[in-house]
Length: 111
Length: 114
Image (cartoon, rainbow over all chains, first blue to last red; front, side):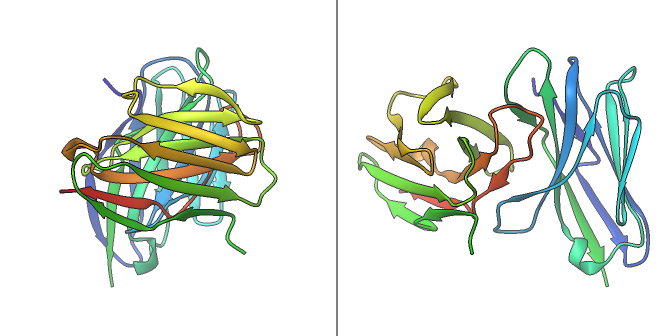
């Protein structure tokens, strides 16, 4: 099974609302990254959080990491229609030398 | 300037054919990757090269052969294409071949095998 599993698989909200996506993983990690993929495009890096960090902010993005629960969340505040995309978490496992991507959450922000 | 570029963007071909996808990065990165994204958007790494040296080779059929002529280029050649090869293939690069560096992705190549 995959390292990263995301929840929910799909999320539909209204513009201005907050969107929260969750990622769970199974093994020990060095860091966790979040990426966005717009339809028909490549992935774009959003934020990286290291295993010794609990929370990180970047603009309207807030990422938390709970290594005891092996989970992370991505919060997008005051969402915009342009935030409509798929969001993926990716883990850098301590045992490996690559990123393992989750299944993604499809976020739709309705204007 | 495009950081990571791939050609072609779309590739439609018949079963049994051989095809290549090219990738170039102008970021000066040491490491390049090929990923396959299936119809459910699951992204799986296929290969990784660091300074032209193969460092990751997942369990991919040997019909797939990567080639890195220099550290700015990583091409993917696929022999005897099968229906199950239909997917979107992404090239990516990172400054170093470690998971604590962000990866920069190309726009993808949508391969359709008929």
